[in-house]
Length: 243
Length: 264
Image (cartoon, rainbow over all chains, first blue to last red; front, side, top):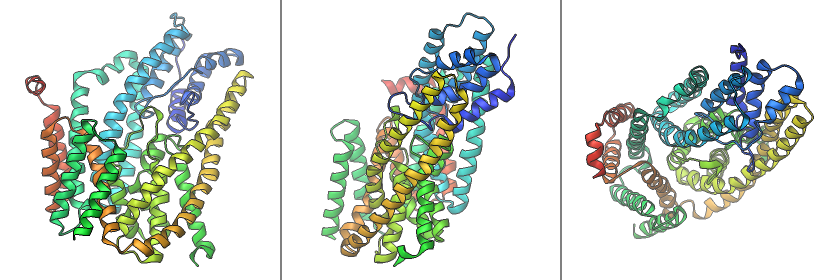
């Protein structure tokens, strides 16, 4: 029974973490990052340069995901590759279908939860703490975030699809919603503290009303972000002339 | 003049190289450390502050830029705004221009410069993607030839050098050129109330986009307004973080009945 060694798994994760999107292109996007990350795993499972090259070539298809939560896709790809090496009848087509299915859904989850909510909430907290906040953000997001990605990668590799079910359950849905609303609350508080000119109550009310109206119009798709930008700048200039 | 001083030119080049390495999506130091740490305006302003030896001054300019693009997402590899260009290019150029013009509204100057750099920076991202196309071609050719060891050069060393040299120099040159023009511009309009308010309202444009992206219904508009009033009243940030956690726990524990009620 062939098993991917811990060293190869670590190398694979590290390669994805550093080089997952380093050769991002408009055509294949993160394909080369996936190929590079899979090399240690494939080298561990197969022998002979010919077979290794052939296996790596099967990863040359289009690949794009949210790179942080996307570590799970690399974990799953390593697990499937191991199953294939052990003769469990994994075809390239089947493996590609699993990867494609995961990359889209995880990209959506990563963009909504991590980029759209967790990062803003942590940044807002860091915002008010000066230098300590900046160093805190680097440590919290850079170190703990990296460690969590590695844990996710290992979990999915070890448990296969069972390691992913927690990402698609009701609890995750609730967590995403909680992160979004918590982040909005935190961002608004940070705006109140740092984004508003001191003593300018009228300006505060006007800016808040503009932001609320802008959000409403964006939601109703009555205005594009560019048009909103022009409207808000015009309103600010008008307000300055009235002062 | 400032730029003729070798030491200061070196500082701008350092900032350009860090900005180049931060990357937008295609970061050669990894997405987490590059795009989501180095590329954020708050972290960038801290690093720029260290380099120009004015951390509080540059942080004060970086915070409104960070507020403007707090929840910038790049879905499907589309980069609407190049945040690291806005951070490293915009904030540095604004700091230099404010330094020379004596503009009384540094935050507004930073936000407006960041907006220009953010949108213009998408061209730099396009250039990086084109350069990556070359590395991709070489990597695929090497794979076809059975040379898997070549991937180290095409995936790590090549992008690192191209970001540091091409993007870094491009960004440094843009900072030098833009800061000169911006100094002249700030000398003309920098003291006007219109410039001051236009810069001040821009983060609220970001807030409108964030509220649109994060809120699900009107009650969250009200919650955001309440949070803003609390922040304005002087609520300290740790208290805001605790309230944020409480909101998150409350939302996480929401019952299916409450969900159904909301849907109705």
